[in-house]
Length: 457
Image (cartoon, rainbow, N blue to C red):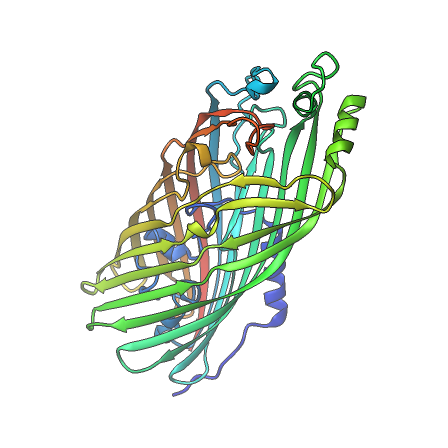
């Protein structure tokens, strides 16, 4: 019998979109990606994400998987993400051209900021072969906060990137073995970045005497904010190879943004600092930056060994090489602010297993290895002190009735102690006025997630 489609109400979608816009999610996949889009998937370390199609979150991981769902499903989930990133200074200093003095001993505290990341998905049947779904999620984000006077203040103090992804999708069941799916990803991004400015070093490098204004004697700040919209797509195919085994292939496109906003400068009450700011155009002005989020390709396998056990695996390729630099352009005469990243493409590998002792309970576990796109210590930014990470995850699901199911997941991420070695290379270096930031991070992440799923047949 065909199912009568029931669509997500505009009011519900607006509420969740507003909720997502209020959070500042930290980054937990490689780079600044957020892979936490499914609580059930978290329990398996997101192994088999493009092939499992266990619930409505398949809208994000592989829209073709909607063809396996029955009736109407509504899924609401939340992920509490608790990162930690503690810097240990190892000899940071200002540029030798301005004296090379120490930048102090303040390590900045714990730059990690806990956040809640919600997800909403709904899938309905249009007819026996065609399914419609919509997802609202946050696929990218970052949040780091340092003490204002820390040794790396000229590189970063506060950094925030928020995204909201609205993803309507369709799935079509071609036959008993093949299904295809496609969706449109409409994304909003908002960035907020701040750092200190060493007007003393700027003054000395400009030919001024340190007796008038010495390096680190008169710090100011700049805060740049901007937002914008972008559009992309996601595609998927699913193949039921045998009665127990299926394979999924899913692609999400890159999305290009032009973020437009403002730059707000604070200048210390010092005549030499004020003169330097005026000379260099460091005044309140409009600002803009271009941002490209990477495309991803996932290949997953799911095998139902028997009525109790299932195993799954996944490999995901992320094209972080689209991000060569972060460049902020000012509407004033100020020079562009540039951070060269030279990020590389990465792979994420994951395997998992699920055990269902009966029709009500399912227990999940998984491990994953996620490569960092940062090529070396010179290109690691304190805004994103990213490193290779190993996931250990587990979770469970409980089916209270035919209409209501709950899932809970937990993961701990072990992050290789990322090293940073930002050193200026002399006149013309983008880091000349930021100094030499040298040290090591002690980093990790804990994630606790829960979701509820309502099904109607």
